[in-house]
Image 1 (cartoon, rainbow, N blue to C red):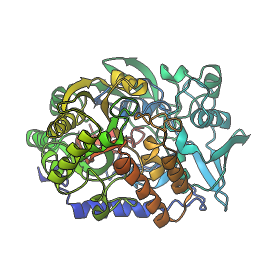
Image 2: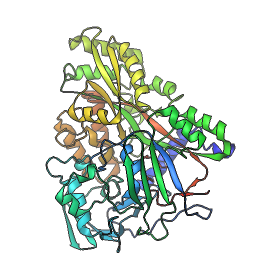
Image 3: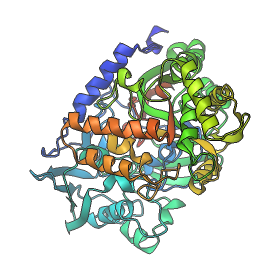
Length: 550
């Protein structure tokens, strides 16, 4: 039983130690240092076994199948095994970066030219060879999307000036200015699946409804509302991989049904997370038949305020909303039965760019004295002409902990005289409401694969700079701060710019609100081998090294 309980309670000291180690890794990938990756090998002490089908649960369904467009794990978990990326994070040595389609790469001394040499003999699942032309077409779709095509991470590549293919196996990126995070946050992104150039050029939206990649598994079928099936790619470019014959991702949006399915062995895991009580129940029921892996998480829920709607166009009203929420008390309460745990700003607490609590406490919404905060919130509402009992609707995504934190926030707002209705919406309609502005206040998220401000601050840029600013404001001060921090190579100077950005988003203008940063818990059957948890539920989902012991 004890072996199944891996670090049930991680103290803040342990949490900070872990993130400090990640911070050291952050600077190990210097833009000036070329790397020579080798194919990733399974670190398992046991001899990997070939065969078997991995069945796992996915808590939500994807709005579309195009990872360049979407921002939800519901795309990555069931469909990442069909694709490859240029680079990727080594899940066994996070945050080390290794090659995926790239067998090697170099960076010019001035940090302005990144050149990648592609593996030879890689084929798409239709049998056609992959060349540098496919990589160029893919990144042009991401960085310079044609009209009508959504690219969720376009703004994070503002440093890229051009992409070219000197020959069939070489891809060259030229930058306008050096970027501290380009190698890690840019080229190792798990979202940047490499697509086929012929298809992109014919129909850049084809991948929203179709699948064709070079990954370790070939697409068999997608039945909406039910499952995704993949089978082993016998022509995969890493010899001897994958170990599995195939996988089946089963959509299970009912949380109790999902936990019951893990308990019965119908599915072997859910790669997102479980709650602490769910972990404990599974360990009690299954003992050493299951293993538990836990990690701090680069993830939090945000509350997005539609600044195009009155009275939310008034920063006084938005400040009142954030002042009403007791985050310090909420951390003690919600961490008892959810995976929401840490008070923080726009970057992960304890990470290399995190604001210390002594500075965080100065921002409205983070004051320790909740009575003082709520008194100021009521004053701001009166000053803005918002009547007692003003009513609006909070929309919550229908997977946890979105609804639970929604209930908590509504209770907090009622204590300053607001009457808030709660509407819980499935992922597809919820995503559509975000994109069309069909909401008063809604929850969203920060969830990334790396502790870097270029990623974590992206959703807070002006709405004409990024497609994921659902608060729908234009703020050139924030745009300027983002660009300055992105170009700043001195970590300490960059950190000060990040803090200035946070103070404006969270306090001065209160465009969006942060709830609590999360703690990730994975319970899986012990026979599932070759998978290791990271601080991101976006990583390690290609299933290349996963195997089943029986």
